Image 1 (cartoon, one colour):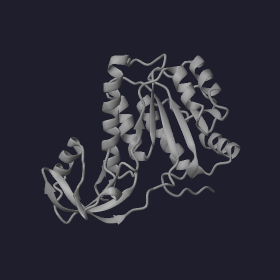
Image 2 (tube, one colour):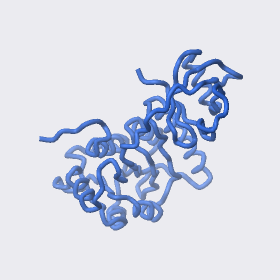
Image 3 (spheres, helix red, strand yellow):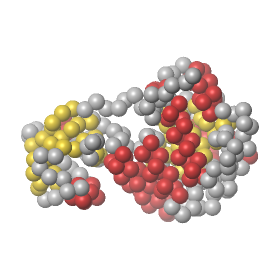
Length: 266
């Protein structure tokens, strides 16, 4: 059984002078620890502000915060590729669904994309609040699924900013329902990695998924021009909903990169 996971914003456990010390959990995480009914003697996994990974034993509680001692230094999962999902803004709670489930899979970064056909509109006043909400969902999903890193959610971006961000990736896979059937994801990914000369575990891959109305042709053209290793890919014959594609596409990329366990190919 995996240990409950917690992420610390400011506390660095290696700098703690005492053998036993309180974990500086956020208010919400302290409530979560209470909901879990954690008790002295139980163990938790902690990723601190220095991104160091520890197993801690709960000794007692002080003002709702668990007092712990370090039981062991765990190996950080450094062999995970960096997969970024560029997700077209979707209406209702679809963005929350995508961020939650994609984080559980191991997606490391999200770029909400204010696409031309996005029904959902986020103005500058609401962008910060929305981003904070999405970041909280990513954190909750990372804790629930036992991730050893916390996915970063960027503020919503328009096309020029998205293209500028994509320039720094090793490969960009643009998922489009009008892509030819020959635009196979694993072939495009393998070709890009061969061109940049990187092993899969060190790869930085961006996956672009459009909103409900799909990507406009001019957006596809701009996205493909944003990176020398950008490719158009198809997710198969079925036309997937944006919230489905936003989970399936990065899952396929993580699988191809070995991020979802060992992969064998005939």
